[in-house]
Amino acid sequence: MPEIRVDGMLVNAAEGVSLAVALLSAGRTRFRTSLSGEPRAAVCGMGVCMECRVTIDGQPHRLACQVQVREGIEVRT
Amino acid sequence: MIVVVGAGPAGIAAALAVQECGKAVTVVDENPSAGGQIWRGDPTHRWVARFRAFNIPLISGVRVVWGYPAARTLVLEDAVGARRLAYDKLVVAVGSPEIFLPFPGWTLPGVFGAGGLQALVKSGLPVRGKNVVVAGTGPLLLAVAASLRKKGANIRLIAEQTPAALLWPFAKQLSGRASKLLQGIGLAWDLAGIPYAPASWVTAAQGDGRLQRIVLNRRGTLVTEDCDYLAVGFGLRPATELAAIMAGPDTIVAGTGDADLSLLEGRIAGYTAAGDLEKARGLEPERDQARTFAASIDRTFAVRDELRQLADSGTIICRCEDVPLGRLEGKTCFRDAKLHTRCGMGACQGRVCGPALEFLFGWHGASPRPPIFPARVGSLLSEG
Image 1 (cartoon, chains in turn blue, green):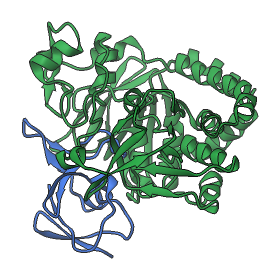
Image 2: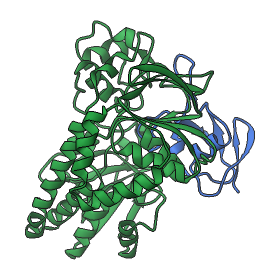
Image 3: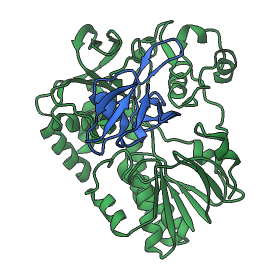
Image 4: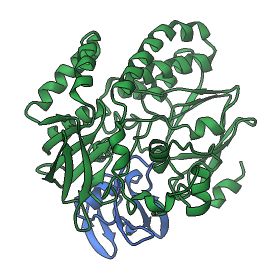
């Protein structure tokens, strides 16, 4: 099971799932914070709505629903 | 070489048709594997298996962000870089995203698209024991409810905004189409015991930082339903951005409807791209029939006027720029709203709020400009 780090905390993800699935499975419901401060999470699941944007290994604006989890990635929400 | 963008039903059918004609084809798709949203995570599906069996080259995990129809070139971007891809003929088969309509609380985490939650579950999201309400309109709701239930979700209710008086004639019409009927019987079995409420819709989603309950207008009565997830969608609508910027004599567009129609359009596009016009023409009567059926679905499940009244002045309309309905008052068109509020100018580039504004105010979006997805500057400057 790939181990990833989300905002500094270790999260165990299931094998072969998308990052969005790994975050939701771990009970994380704030993928990003909207301009007015609201928590937002994945909506469309297919790379259209852009609500699941996170920073992966320092790269901002990656779509969690379109990325497979990999061992050791660092995610910032 | 013939390039197909999209590895869903239309793209797969197009690529197979090209290869059948003995021409070289490459498929480009933004997902990790072929199948599109409908067959995502189902490598055993007949069409996906055929696609793999024929070893058709697939460039996956990349997004087409720009292109030059006159130079017959696409600009592709992936996680690390960008490259250009030249083609002789281009088939655009990028599918149809879901339509979302705003209501109070629709931005809460836990509110998903209907197809959206299905896509996440197909990507491995566990829903066993979760209380889920499926709402919105269209036949997709049934398929979503059935597939979530198979994964152990507790489907509290399917709220279909279309009144029963329109649903019955539609169901009768289905019985005239063998394949649809078989699909319907299978679904009826999977859905047995799930409450199906016509003339019902979600008026609000509520919760502290995440969805905890919804308010439902159930045939005129407001009721509250506790739930973990809401899957809400108002039908599908073809993505037109890439087709618009790549329009030209060497571009063919396919896949503007359900899977059956998309397969037909894909095959026609593939034969056309490969130059076998006779084969393409031979499929047109069947395609026209499928289009007639798709149009009848659209008529039956047209969104009712009451849903225009759900959003209040504080309801966010543009989720990217957090523009509430109140700030759009007095604006005369989409462009006016963009210039004064940034509505539709965020990361999704109006893909979510565009159809909502069309429904609410009758506004139409401006024609798309490249890049059609947010892209790195380096990708746009890339050579070769």
